[in-house]
Length: 330
Ligand SMILES: Cc1ncc(COP(=O)(O)O)c(C=O)c1O
Image (cartoon, rainbow, N blue to C red; front, side):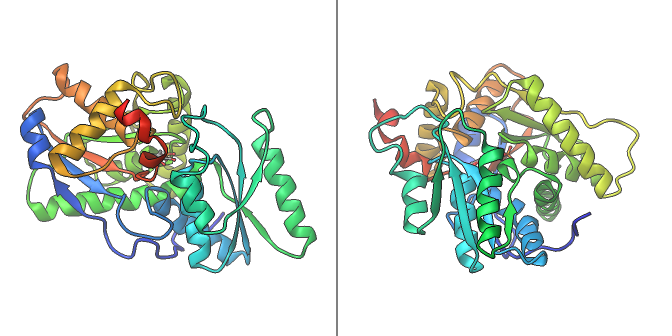
């Protein structure tokens, strides 16, 4: 069992919790944003919280090469390459074209550009190739040349990764207690590989907070995502010795995915523009824009009212804006 308390410092401070006065006035409820997009190396974002324990585990087991499966616009890969640079480790990104090409610069701009700047080693595989097999082959090559590889789980979402979002839940709760205001009724988060929502769920349960954690899926169907998040949440709950008699209430909504992962939606793009114009904050078309479009729809339908308080987790991904420049203004 890996050590769950061992962490490297990647953020170095709690991330800000900011009230959004203009958006709140426009939409009705009191809306706060948790700025996990701010700080850290490699362009930051939610993956850094996951890498705090994963990279500590890699270092504790004397690994020198981090291997991750991704695509050319992957935030997880870009952030991992940055962290590897920070710790003097090697990193290898096993890349396939997961997202239909959005424009001629798609595989060269945004996260791809940042990975290039950090001189990332990219191993390109075909769309039909299996990530796991390709990562094992890369790991074998590293071992044969005297190195020690560490394979990052998909999206950084295993127990060690998800524990990073128990930390985030603790921070949010501390921040609300300091504000001396009622706890949030809702927490909205973009849901991909599931670790972020699973950690938040366990973290809020640990403090006996009843906030509803809504995962807006940008990848899987509600059913598939629920199975992933449920298994991981239970693993985290066991690991932190949380004694509960009710199963966690897992709320997931896949209605905002649109045509699929990485394909922008009209509502997501509108949400990006709304946040930019009302608050000077930037979201992205793959994750946070779609999650914000979910929040806006929940408010419009009356599921969330003006008496509610909402925290929106800003999970990062801003470099993606550059990769989708023409979609924003077409
Ligand atoms: C910007 C952003 N938001 C949200 C997510 C989803 O987080 P998780 O994979 O933990 O569900 C990701 C994952 O890549 C991401 O890059």
